[in-house]
Amino acid sequence: MERPLPTLGDPQNTIAVLQKYGFNFQKKFGQNFLIDTHVLDKIIAAAGIGSDDFVVEIGPGIGTMTQYLASSAREVYAVEIDQNLIPILKDTLREYDNVTVLNEDILKVDLSALAQERNAGKPIKVVANLPYYITTPIIMGLFENHVPLESITVMVQKEVAGRMQVGPGTKEYGALSLAVQYYAQPYIAAYVPPNCFIPRPKVGSAVICLKLHDKSPVQLRDEKLMFRLIRASFNQRRKTLVNGIANSAELPYTKEQAARAIAKCGFPASVRGETLNLEQFALLSDVLLSE
Ligand code: SAM
Image (cartoon, rainbow, N blue to C red; front, side, top):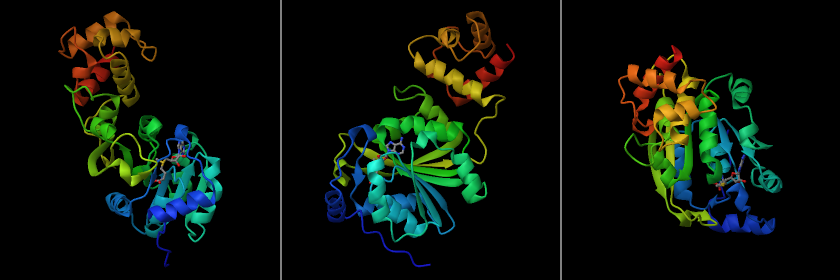
């Protein structure tokens, strides 16, 4: 079926919509709307959206990227928290018969149930120009809740895209880097300057595509335990790992158990979590399970 071509993305059309509705941007919702058609084309290409795809969009705003997604995908499900945007979306998406808009906080939506219901349980694609204030909880939530995912293609702060790709020995290395490595293969599809948005964000942005692994790069007995361990390490990153583990409210181990497990892994007694790579965290979590 022929679908209408997107009209938003052109700054003049975006401004006309904003004026028509007297829309006030809400800082607390991280609202920076895209006004660059080249960037929008790049996002759709990076996500590889095809006519078979069921796509979840987080934070459609006034529907700019939603129009692009709806032109290419089978079905788009867009979740927007700001109720002031709902009548606008009704207007800007009125010609698309394959879009559903839900007025809800994405962190409260059960995307696994949605994939089951709308995509026969098959992996879905997530695409978003993310609200930067909750980038990490959104991405970690998608991974840790085991939403059936094919890929996540998102606009994030440039610095966060960097954090997703680094290993031990850098100050950007953290729980997000390890989660991305464990679950997906990241690649940066574009760097996007502030003038591609209205209003302009204070930071540079990047489009990152996370393609989910068919098989994780490390095998381990208890994934949840490994991520508790990782959080314990980076919540207190200047502390030794022994203390990080013993002080964690999420972990049941004593200082003696932690020290014994660290020694069994062959790590120095004073090791800090930030120096360990994914394989080493996986090993330590398996050893701790036997404590
Ligand atoms: N997709 C639009 C675009 O590219 O022009 C808007 C992107 S803007 C950076 C982020 C959007 O996410 C805003 O529309 C904001 O209201 C919405 N948002 C913020 N927090 C949200 C949440 N917890 N759940 C769903 N949407 C949220």
